[in-house]
Image 1 (cartoon, rainbow, N blue to C red):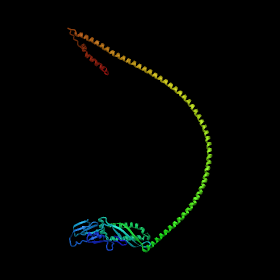
Image 2: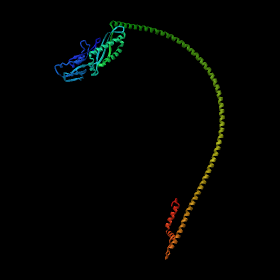
Image 3: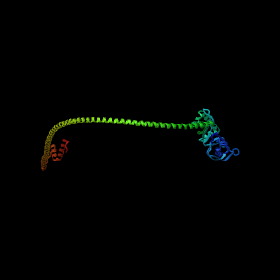
Length: 433
């Protein structure tokens, strides 16, 4: 949609029906420079019919519609049945990415050379319906065209004027980045997004271009001559290097011979030094050997004397230990004998004590038995007397008072026995029955 050397023009067109929007967006006009970005449909039934039976809403672009000339926002694609005359599709705005060509002719450089610069930029309207409404009602196609044309030409002329003619091509990338940020800062508020800016071509005047071409050819030929000269210089330098290398090799060979002679003399001197050193070392070794022999002999005598003295000391020590052990053994034997005697005496004493205890217990037991026997005999004698007294016939005895009570106690020995037992218990409370 852009042509090299031809300035693009953004336009807003009136169309008969919204269904023709795609073909109208593709139509670039008679000279091929027009770029329609907004279409305004004209209804043929607005004056003669109060409504349309069906209205086809195309898909793809932003569709803005109005009711009683009031904006109602986006209209979704599809068929609208019974479309009244006070409703209308007001604007059809393209969503496509637009390529806009803005060439600047006869731009003076810093050295007053007129150059032609062809600039191409891409932009789109969006990304949503609010951005499209903002663009339609606040800016429009014609004012956007004037804005892009003025900003791009002003920026191009300012850039070209800041450099000389041989530096224009070097500022393409830097200029494109600066121009992109500048355009976005001025168009973003109206719903326009500039995505890319590119300088497609920079053309110098024909005569200057031809001179520069001849200059370039001369520089190329001069470069070839310099390379040929450098090649010849390099050949001469190589020959010179070879000659120097030959001389250096000859000198190195002579130096090697001298160094070989020097090394031979050094080796002979070292051999003589080693021979003298060997003889001195042999004498030194012999002297050290003799000294070692004498030293070892003295050490041997010393060790022998020490061993003899140590053996005598050990013998005396062993004798003393034997005597001590003998005395210790005698003392231990005497202690054991004394212990055995004492143990035997202790056992005899314990046996005597036990015998005495057994004898005492036997005597105690025998005394109790004798006492019981005598008591038994006396009891039987008393009972016999009472029996005689009770058996006297024809005589009645009346005994009262203490004598009567004594006689009654005697007649009832069991009560007396129980009374005696109680008296014993009361007299010895810690002894069992």
